[in-house]
Image (cartoon, rainbow, N blue to C red; front, side, top):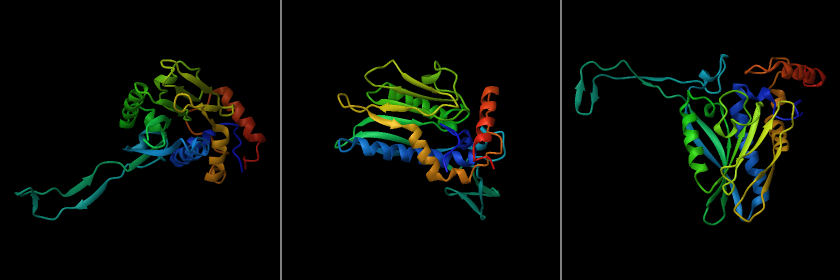
Length: 263
């Protein structure tokens, strides 16, 4: 059953669904592009692994990934190198959170595997300065913008700090931006209201080759169906934070009232 929303479904932004959606979306974008760009190019999923305590991002109890502390008993005597420690610690604690893999999509040229286009789908850790991944992502984006690589950023999260690429865009819940290597410093921006379908956007390839086309509405609809989100979302519950504007709240209430998804 399709989502009742014409574009991005804000209920997918809840912590227990987002990372699953993010991975499926990256995979679907990669598959869609590979049907268009071969044999001269290919799209590949590239993971970035970070260790973050994601519950800090949410005021609610549930979290995308919990911070895990793993403890082990330490036998005596305890040795540090060749020196015996007379008073061993009671426990050894693993303080890092669980590994969080964030997928990007890269378009590479066949043969030499030269990176042509980088596609980033933002996650909560990319949009909050309290996370290391926030700063890592900004360094990565800076390096890409100083290179000969096209850069496409997809932000389908209402919460968090909008990136520098989109700060001049209208204040909409979602936003997509494209920086073509041959057109910098200019940036193409697609502001996306909550009640709007997702745009079909160009994906540039090497100079002289026509753009690929990314039909985001079709792709997100496919991800929603394949992910079975209609069976996981209770549309009688409030939209996950952040809070909607008054106009958005009225529109969502009317949409769900008319939709068969409201049970």
